[in-house]
Image (cartoon, rainbow, N blue to C red; front, side, top):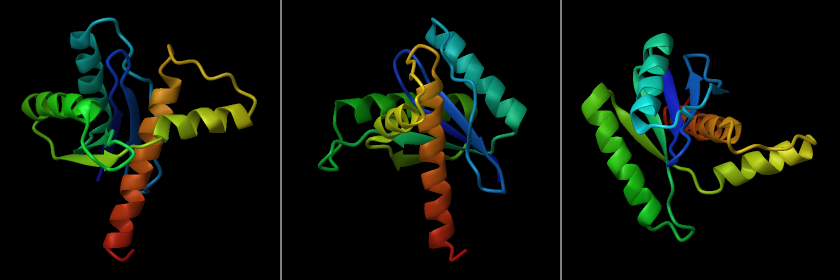
Length: 140
């Protein structure tokens, strides 16, 4: 099974990929100026990687409730469903970008938001969490 992981943001959309091996790898983020171009980038990644399912980070509040950002992601997910007609999984993404930034600082790398690198690394964390949770549930 091929998965495309997605970390949604208004300006940048982080992307990651994993296949049956089960290791999530960051891809080039969708950072184009227009929403239409960012969606086209996602479409290209789905086609190139032959993604069969999408895994989207879902930004719950720290108390686990659905807040404003999660509702924005719900709208984005509706667009994905209409456009790509693929199964979509929501994954709790609390603190994923923060974890990536901390990890980069520990490696003495200066994180840059504009490149989308942090967003795609966050997408990889989200996707890896999904894969690991799925394998635990299936007893692998």
